[in-house]
Length: 324
Image (cartoon, rainbow, N blue to C red; front, side, top):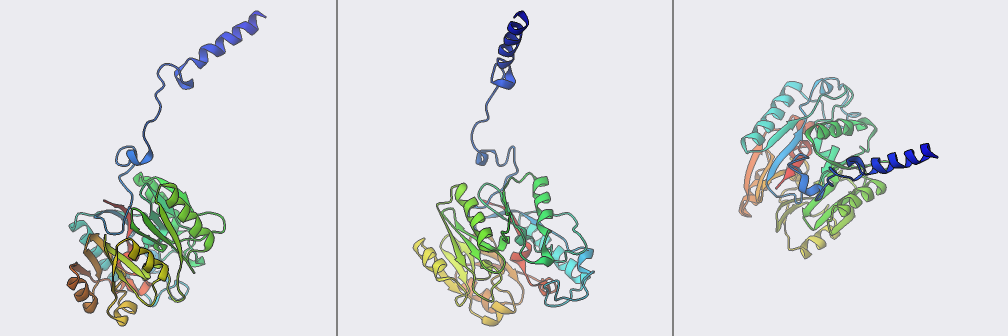
């Protein structure tokens, strides 16, 4: 009996200690969003047009030299590795000269020539990242490298698409802090789109809408680019009516891409806002540049024609980590 009594006394004493809520215990206060910039890296996106602060990019490495047939790589043509790297370095330098922190990702496996298209690997909620699950067999696993890069940077990972879900980061448009669109199509299936939509709802975005991507369009970012709180550039024959009607209700007006040739061949909508009404886009789209300027935008152009042979442009290569 004495031993039993001793055991009871020891247990009671133990529960008074700090690990069990006793003297010295202090509970964690606040929420994750209050820890961004302190315990976690400063990150998050609440709109596509807020000032660009930091990005994840990946310099094309030996993996682009290993491609001998552009079709399995999902490219339009083979890349000249020297030109491609020079142009990528030029885009990195452009961002840095405009105050953007560019984080360069780690080297990837030799069978991942599309890994320089960082936008596809993740998207950002206002509180952290959602990691993609790439749709094509040729790109499967690229997202692992982005997850590791973001973790190393201290970016919280809110969700990783799992199960049979597929999703690519370019299938999200954060129109503003109250409205997000998630594309459902060839690259992001229903399961993936629903998982991503739920992630945005869980961090408090009040209106999250899944919309269908039209045939012939890879991602939703090929149909719209939000460049200010009340202005969007759109591809009118590809844009979902749901997106148009909802954004109009939120006070947006629309500028149609003025040239079909620039839209298709010049990837004119594949631009990145640096700040409200300040954008950078691929060089060689003079009609689009003039139209944007007529609508009060400051426009910068970068030469990335070699990189575009891989099927993407400025927006595709820029994994946005933080806007504010």
